[in-house]
Image (tube, rainbow over all chains, first blue to last red; front, side, top):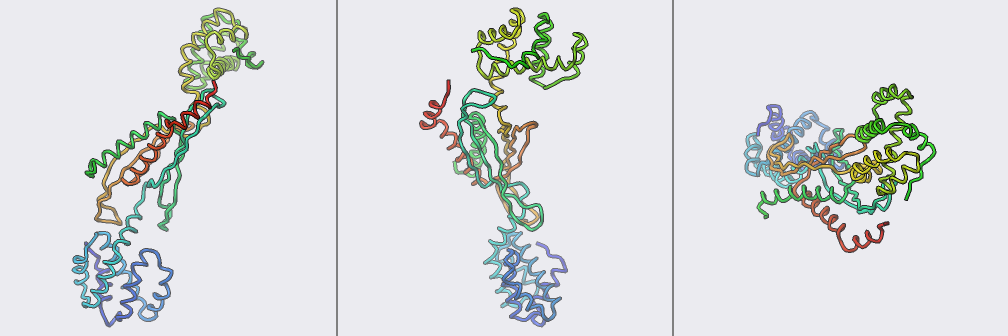
Length: 199
Length: 201
């Protein structure tokens, strides 16, 4: 994992006790995961308070910290490798421990947010069906069963807010068509189960 | 059962009453074309010149034949009923033989096509799938995410449309089992009994 020199400077300043006091450091580290997870509402006040003096440096350090966390989670660094990355930026043992603890504790959450960022194709999350029996219609006097299928997909919104929208896909199947659909799906499922060693 | 045609429909067909058998056969060919590919105004105008009538009359006559076929198929006329219907409308024996031949050859196709043309809602057509593993992305550099990409083709009003979807293995399993259940339900005792009762012969 490589961080840019600018981020490196930010992190070095974050570790510098003369620039960032221990209390400020603790607050910054505590609120950073929530910031990435978009629960920032409750922490805006904390951040404003920290920015009263040397606000440019605080902001720089905070940005570097966020990048560090995101990049580490993205590369799935374990505790040991995370520590060795942070160590190279001159953190004292106390700060190192604090930062590593927070990373270790929130890594799962961070990764799950990162995973959600990449929905390019709608993901199927549910399916529902209904069976109707058509008795007569304007174009045909035959009676036949007909299935209404609805797939529910989850997709990212077009704007960059990172929101999720549900999309619904409706279509009809005759009995033969549904048989065809199910057999294709079974085929795929079987293949995956075979690969996973379940069957 | 004999079909009773509307006066307007009869008027459209009346052009054909006077035509010899070989001309009627040409009309049958045009009607078939109409069924498969839709209206072909160019062909009609050349036919109109030969017969010295309006192109519109030719089109009406062809649509008349098509409508007659569809209505007959809808009402499940057998050959005798169809013959009687033609004779009542005003066709002679020879003409009736030609049209009956056409009906006989296309009846099966029509009865297959008609149910699907009711209410133009998208129908399932095909499903292609691909199993893949996502190993890296901009936001998550190191990962191993199995997923299945599905290309669902639906036939709608006009062109077939395709929908691209993805599912993780768990959701795919879920989807498969839910739809399998739906399929089982169709052949369950309860629904078979209901289907028998609802069938109108």
